Image 1 (cartoon, one colour):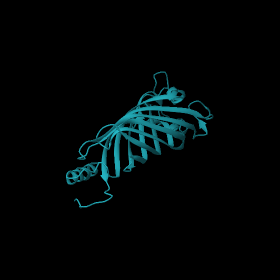
Image 2 (image 1 turned 180 degrees about the vertical axis):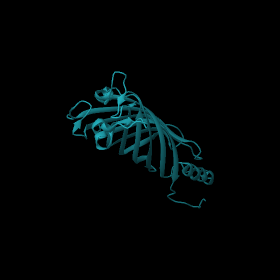
Image 3 (image 1 turned 90 degrees about the vertical axis):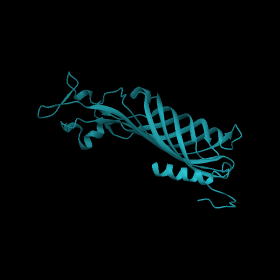
Image 4 (image 1 turned 60 degrees about the horizontal axis):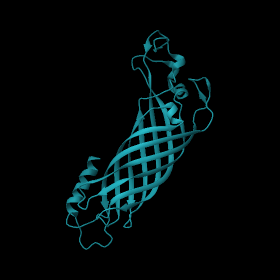
Length: 244
């Protein structure tokens, strides 16, 4: 990220003599967001956070074609996957009599592609309403935060997968927000709301926590309020000078 910022600043300085806002560009957006779950996902997890990036090609006509990767994480797990192993005090006993405190964390990932358009609403060619639609692959699970001082054999190795409740599947995504790319390249950001509609299914045959098979498809939803900093790399279509 530091290297990219330095490159972007160097480009901005060299291009300040010329308005590049109408040229095609490749933009790297580093994002962070706050997520609200919906559908079946709301029964398992609470609010969470998202970090990720977009890599977008934007044409002279402001058409957008891009790739996206997000990682989301949270501490609000509503179903205790290890309830059957806990004692009255909420701790889990190891075979040699030691007690361990183990909690669950939410973890998830999304990988996809999108297309869209930027609709300018000011004098700047690259400042306006951004709309994209896309699809990809989303997964989510429970990550067990182990006690490093006590080993619990029931959740080691392959047994651990029986408690993580891993689900994954095809996802539709959409984004609506505002994007701004300055003519001098110094201030470049986007902000808005992203919606994910995921059709997931269990990736584990058996659920050890419920002592039952994992069955049934899910309807998982996420609403994310996100902000991103954009590092733009412009391509001149008819250059009359070379800038370094």
